[in-house]
Length: 185
Image (cartoon, rainbow, N blue to C red; front, side, top):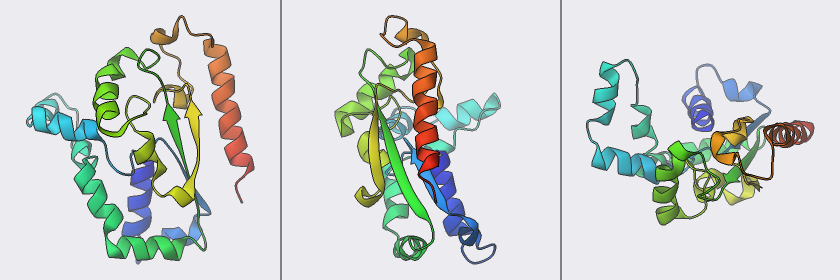
């Protein structure tokens, strides 16, 4: 969700702090730019979820921000689109998407994986490739064989029998980030 937060920050601060004038690039990796069918499903089937978790100190209100309709509303807002076009001359936008198989995704993400797969296809256990693309002109590549945790360089027990060791995964993900950084202005 960090990519969505960054986009909202750029837009919401466009007049006062004008932070976009100090940003050279915005790189997002598996950001749910178009929202998440899992957020839609969760809030439909468990409408009191956020309220219940708030009682134990966890704020899940971000799920509302991740609903596909809310993301669509933000993405299609004429003011947001105009601001995005203005920023393109100064900020380099790039997006990346992760992709994993059902059997390779972390166990706790398998339910979300199936819900997202049914609705939008290939995903990393939390974000579909379609949603992570944002705009085709910004999309760079799909990072294969990575679930949402792997994209942070985290290895999970479900990959115990995978051909890639935790060390090899970490090296692969670090190399990806180094390559991305080397291409920045």
